[in-house]
Amino acid sequence: LKALFPEDILKTSKDLTEGEVKFLKQLNDLLEEKYRSSINDHWVNATVPEDFFEDMGKLNYFHNPLLFEGREGEKTPSQLFQFFMSYVIARFDVSLVTLLGVHQGLGHNSFLFGGSKEQIAYYLPKLQTHELRTCFALTEPEHGSDVAGGLETTAKRDGDKWIINGAKKWIGGANVADVIPLYAVDVDTGKPKGFIIRPEQEGVEIDVIENKIALRIIPNTNIKLTNVEVKEEDRLQNINGFKDIAKILYSTRAGVAYMATGAMAGALRATLDYVTERKQFGKEISKYQLIQEKLAMMQGNLAQAMATCAQLARMQAKGEYDEVATSAAKMMNALRLRESVAMGRGITGGNGILAEYDIARFFSDAEAVYTYEGTHEINALLIGRALTGDSAFI
Ligand code: FAD
Image 1 (tube, protein in one colour):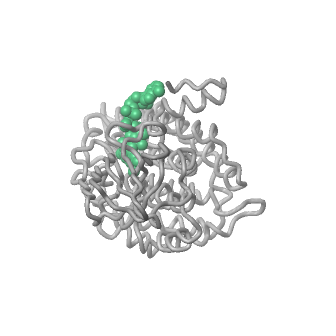
Image 2 (cartoon, helix red, strand yellow):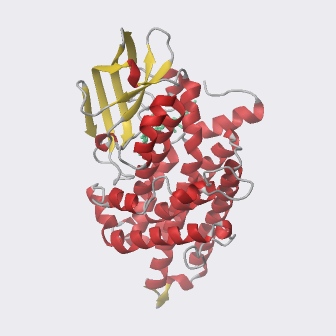
Image 3 (tube, protein in one colour):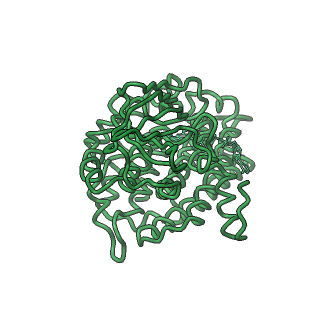
């Protein structure tokens, strides 16, 4: 365990089972041995490593049976294990964990929470074995933080089908998805509903957003919808208002806190590797006190974030989902991630802005983590509302 997580100074990983540790080691070895040498090139070229999804499937990453063994007193799936699965991948690369997270989290849970019994029975096994790939299409060009009341994409009922018109922005992996859960406002009731869209459908245009400075490996897309026809049977039957969509968002917000924590560990590693190699004034810069203070801050931030995630995971495994705790974890871990990557970037000097030194990738990717799944401000407003009883959104 110490070899796998030397940075885990508060021993948050000690409750992992032997089987879980074995799996995490295999996952880590695969990433290091197969993908380490090319990951920065993929980031620069904005390409997904070719075999990545296949390899994750072979390793049984999706719907891993260990998740469902559970620990005493816990309901399954095991959140602690989930935390460390995300952590190990995020420590390696944040785009890759985001790509998996969009499929497994927001996408999968759109069907789990939004689907009818029949839809769940049909789609879940296929999503869990990765036979079908999915994503999550909520944000629009003009509506991000205010999607709750602001969606402009419309759905008009026409007999046994719906006609969808509008546009979505930022949708991760829609270009490689088989089924896209997409949210649009029912023009007759004014309430948002969920629809299962297929990329090849008439009227659906998907293009990849170019020139991102963060998460370059994950393709984010614009989706344009022009008179797209969706059968009533392809409407997610249990999405009947924004509160149903919010449930999906809350279910995965902890996952972003997990990813932010893994990214902090990745930044710490990249920085440690550098300071022990780089010499100035005749000795390795790791020997200087001002450098060590920053490394200590990065380690301290990471330890706090790991402890937060482990406790959140414990609560969630007992079925305790708390909106404030989850928002606080996402908000603070993303904030600390931003602080840590900036210190790492500073310590690595000029080389720290070159893509071949991993820190540049973590530095840039932190910006996306800071913004998605509720920006810093939106999570702060959710917490503020709970503390004061006053909603300050508008
Ligand atoms: P805006 O909402 O325009 O916010 C701009 C700024 O204003 C922010 O700082 C915000 O905090 C602040 N602000 C807004 N309202 C208030 C207020 N009331 N008080 C104080 N400050 C406020 N969406 C999907 O649906 N699916 C995806 O797969 C997906 N993937 C993404 C991947 C990446 C890399 C990124 C960057 C985004 C992704 N998103 C996705 C969208 C993401 O959820 C939004 O970017 C996010 O919700 C913020 O919306 P916005 O970018 O439109 O910013």
